[in-house]
Amino acid sequence: MSDKPRGELTTRTLAMPADQNPAGDIFGGWVLSQMDIAGGICAAERAQCRTVTVALDGMSFIRPVKVGDILCVYTEVERVGNTSLEIHVEAWVHRDRARNTVKVTEAKFKFVALDIDGRPRPVAQA
Image (tube, rainbow, N blue to C red; front, side, top):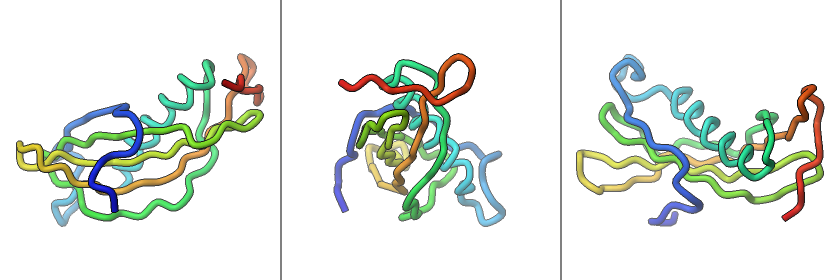
């Protein structure tokens, strides 16, 4: 496992008590939603249009997220198809008010670019 995040820092947010489960860890669904937001930002910036999430591959939780952790989500465009994009997304935390950085999960998100009427549209090749 890498000791350095892959991609660009796209979002940062603080894990709050309202986001925890009964065991005191942050709900996995909350982490997933933060990753989806960051992936969507990356996809929309690359496609220069509205994008929607269509799939998620290979997510596994490596470590729990705790209340007070700063969740940092990194993104990188892996592939651009005709109307779709694959975005590699990693979530890391800054823990204990120190710069102790820990990777908590990663996944590949797939997005589709949409036109103004909500139909798939081509993504410009770079």
